[in-house]
Length: 215
Image (cartoon, rainbow, N blue to C red; front, side):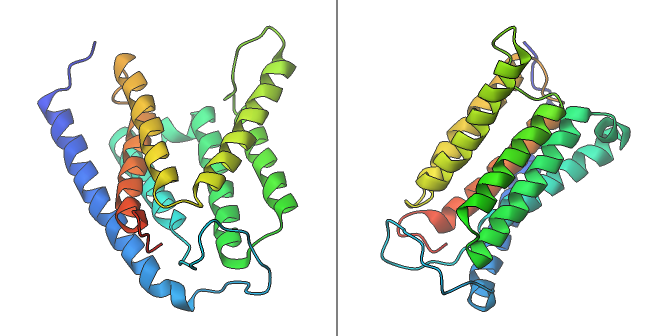
């Protein structure tokens, strides 16, 4: 098992602390500016809470994702990103998911559009070589992967109706993924840094999303 060197521990700790602060600042700014943000007020949405709260919390996640990617690029070189087909797929799918989520926060997009974009995200990941490999049949593996992606996405959307639940669940999922990377002796991979950045984004968001949530 890889031992976490002093330099790596210091680098990751500093990166984590800085990105948590950035997340808090971005979410605080989003909270203040949400009153002027566009939103379709005609269409009604069923929520489990009687109060209306500002949206756009996902902005901080995507910003921290990009910051993490940029830091890795500066440390390892652009070739480590451009020559990694799976990473390109993750970037493309994450960007599409963010844009759709941002549009939904602003304009309450119709369900069929969100469902179609979820399928597109799944197709992007599968095309880039990211899929669940359980059976000899590639088609069956692709179908299971698509079902998992769409299912998890909508499950997290459902949990988002309750204060802090989706954030806490996401934190445990990310920590589990980071533990797997640690056990595989791959702490220097881009995926560990991306997970660390998104984790800090969620922690900064959780400050505003804890009951009673402000965002």
